[in-house]
Length: 169
Image (cartoon, rainbow, N blue to C red; front, top):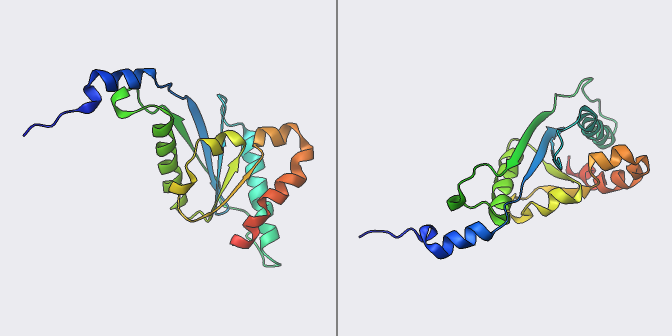
């Protein structure tokens, strides 16, 4: 018995060719027991953005410690990047659904390495992720680091957005 590759049929090839291929890069920063995820929007992750995430993580740790002594120096952040498309083989799928599934798998693997929560920085990243595929962790969404760095008035709202993570220690 022989199998037929339906992806090689003219109809499947035409569908693949007509599907737009999204192009994006996501920064994943693991620090303080949380995974911080942000769409880079075509730019590299700036040092200031990383410093802001580390400062927010430290502030959550201090606020959630309840008077307990914290280590003087926090562990360094682990930064990785997810780029889509990962390949150019249209037979493997390059559309939004494939991108969402691949990113969700990437985030799920990062969360398994000891992260108790996920912080989605900005609306763009949240739209690219399938939250039902990442497991049972606390998830909060707030402004992107780029937005926070350009508008300091967002600090109060961001702190309110992050406050549910205080009970997740």
